[in-house]
Length: 205
Image (tube, rainbow, N blue to C red; front, top):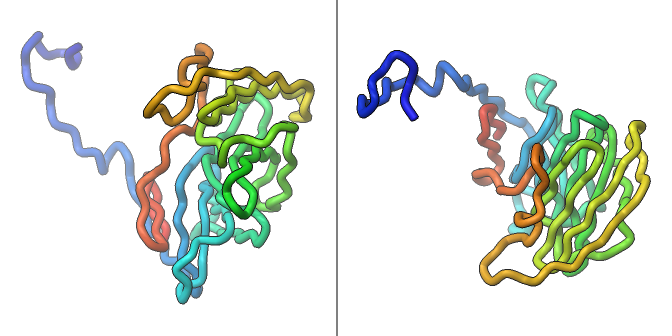
């Protein structure tokens, strides 16, 4: 590979990442700390806690269309994150779990601001699923031992759920990596963050 207008073996021309990916920073004036672990569509997802507490208890979403971003906190979503948007269905998917973190859930909704998620899959995953991949109207979900395909209609309602067992791979985060279809788009890696901060193009503290 080489840059246009340059010969093979030439050093690449340096480019200013700030010009290509401008960053905005906003201060959230409240008494809470936030850790956003994923970003997709117009929303970031993660967890929040009181600034006086050491434990991250519940999930939250940040609407990045607002200036400053509007954060909505939940008191019922545990181990929340890995948000992933489908432009085919207009649906957001996210992962969650029981309060203990042992039984994982897949969560779907049209508007994350409402925190009104429904669970399309009848199975409980091995902890909160860490791989959510959209392919057309299908959502592929993975945990260390299962791969699930959730089929949605054009209106974003659940049509079918197919469950497949996979051989567990040592050191692998999710077995669904071996089953990803062509053209998938999803959320697989947590984003870097610090106490009360969010960094990925736009920064929120």
